[in-house]
Length: 177
Image (cartoon, rainbow, N blue to C red; front, side, top):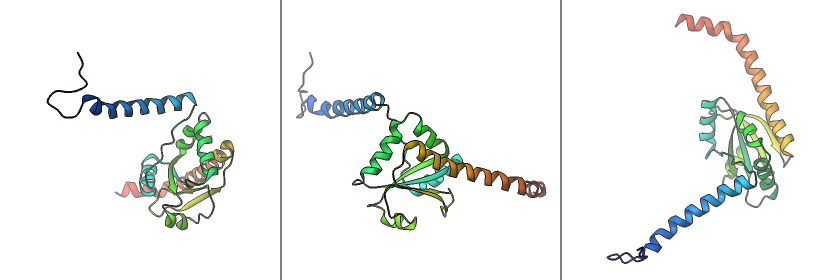
């Protein structure tokens, strides 16, 4: 027989078990909602520096998505990305996304010249984080991803051209080592 009151203890078992049951229920409910409504989770990196480090390791660029709790267009763009099938996968193929709260990090917003929301700043994964492009405003997802991918494609072309030009010098430097 199950006793909801554990003899020898002052706290009923129900009180000890209830928080775990609630957490389990909420986690399953959230997972069900994502599946039921077709939402994909965006794997936001925690900080700009960790985003750069992750991007360097995975040979991708960094996007800084500047938003705020009070910005309906920011929420709209983020929800549209999560709801369109394949959009998050397409985004994360070339970019490491970092969500930056405009209100909490005003110096970061100022550093990248952000004055309107939503703004996405595309940066190189270098320590200096050179700005490679910017998208201001909420766009349809296809247009948004198109602009991001044009920056990635342009950088890829430049990178290949540089490699072709400097490949002989790199080979001779390796041979001297």
